[in-house]
Image (cartoon, rainbow, N blue to C red; front, side, top):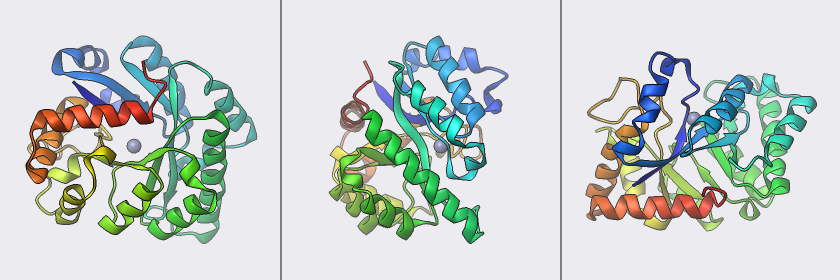
Amino acid sequence: MIFESHAHYDDKRFDPDREELLSSMPEHGIETIINVGSDLEGVKKTLDLIQQYEYMYGAVGIHPSEISDLNEEIYEWMQEKCSLPKVVSIGEIGLDYYWEKEEEERRNQRYWFCRQMELAREQNLPVILHSRDAAEDTLKLVQGIHGEQIPGVIHCFSYSTEMAKEYIKMGYYIGIGGVVTFKNSRKLKETVAQIPLEYILLETDCPYLSPEPERGKRNSSRNLVYVAEEIARIRGISYEEVTKATRENARKLFSKVK
Ligand SMILES: [Zn+2]
């Protein structure tokens, strides 16, 4: 059974067949899915979805590119939602300097990243981190606020193996998805080969980042089979070892999951 640690089924690309697709997950070996908030609308839809599907849990948080959705009132509203039994994480939060070039806006990203990290600490919930083109600032910020006391995962990991090891030192997990199957992702394959299996989580980030051979199409948790197969191939272990270990890792991190 597979634990999907990062999906966006609230995305409008699932509007035509969401129910059909989500109902088919258990028969395709998908045991648990964490639907991850990105903007405010997405968080609200996540809260609906987790009521509808028994195997689905939610992460509440605002993505760095969507922080214009945030203010004190929304922050307090999210704070309230954290106590719902099926809200298991704060995410996705972090820094995205790829899409944001303005220094003032980047500062704003850092501010709300810190606030949401503190929310996680206060609510005793793990974080799901998004970091793109902001390796140095993300690490500095997480270390600066004693991130080692706030468990979490760096989702869709895209930095160096050395950077992965820095996070693992703080107890963080590394989220691996479709990119690892791409022929040109030599760096990520090397990371997957070198870090302990005990720190790897499976994720899709669907509808984005479909693995080979589905690359370019809409992604779904059913494609995690290809990701697990590639990790098994890289590490020279069985597919079952990969799905079993990543499931255990995810259940350790997201401890509110039943
Ligand atoms: Zn995401």
